[in-house]
Length: 356
Ligand SMILES: NC(=O)C1=CN([C@@H]2O[C@H](COP(=O)(O)OP(=O)(O)OC[C@H]3O[C@@H](n4cnc5c(N)ncnc54)[C@H](OP(=O)(O)O)[C@@H]3O)[C@@H](O)[C@H]2O)C=CC1
Ligand SMILES: N[C@@H](CCO)C(=O)O
Image 1 (cartoon, rainbow, N blue to C red):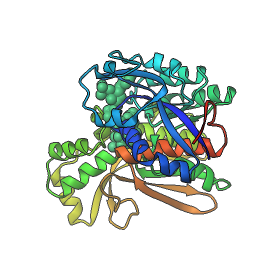
Image 2 (image 1 turned 90 degrees about the vertical axis):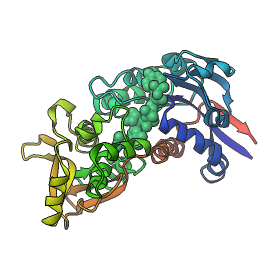
Image 3 (image 1 turned 120 degrees about the vertical axis):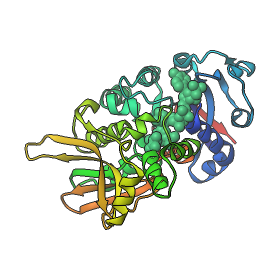
């Protein structure tokens, strides 16, 4: 039986790409049987651990089950203590580069450079990094498409919940005129834990331990992460051309246990809401702000790291999708879903057809 094998490079080896490597260990045979392909890791780059370029493939069990010291990838065949991210992107013979380094909301770097270099080297890009998607998705998509390649980013909003694909594909033909949503797992989780009596610092610590928070969690609690997601949804689904700086933004740090208790006494609940709306003049305006919603509001019951977004549409009225908004495995699933899309569209295959 012939199995298609897609070779991938992992740029950033934190929670999400580790979870993807672990899924490759446990699910590759199932994917081969049910989806028609398997994945082989040929490159890895990480700021602390170093990098590996292994054209014949790296055993994912070695990556996920070894305890590496800083620079520890140097001990592996094709390894180096230096991250060499751009070299891995260019030289590891991957069909697909998976970019999952830190999100930089100001510049999108170095992730934008990783994505550009990947496309220039003839590789598809799959990313859940919100920086390149919010700041450069259009340019990166055009660069990729010119070369017959793809820039996929499902995991940049709502983790593995297929919000972009659902809106683009399943709602095609019905115009989306706006949306509002709970779009940050960490802040929603923190609000819920504070309602249960934890203080802010302890609740944040739990969110970090669960893998929901950004490397700098200020982005989560000050609303900057939601701002990027609002820009992504508005640009991708409403045809807007927004930059993060054009979106008014505040977070949840001013919300105290007293505010939460007062809201509860009134049958209300605080939620951090990101929204955008097309105005009569065609402009799209957007904002991020904590709102005290009545419990009857569809977004008031969204709890933990779950996210939800309600789209206003011309033919269907409101359509709400909810599901995981953060999490290592959930986000690794988003990467898989992008690779499945490439596979089903028949574009991912480039390098390896392995006979089993
Ligand atoms: N976790 C989640 O629920 C979700 C995360 N995301 C996004 O996915 C991305 C990854 O998330 P996650 O895995 O949780 O984050 P982590 O912080 O766990 O991992 C990021 C990794 O990237 C590495 N890194 C940073 N810069 C570079 C670089 N220039 N070259 C190579 N490696 C680099 C870091 O190295 P080191 O630690 O050694 O410094 C770290 O291992 C982020 O952009 C995040 O915003 C999106 C949706 C959900
Ligand atoms: N830190 C983000 C990860 C998902 O983008 C969150 O908590 O929602």
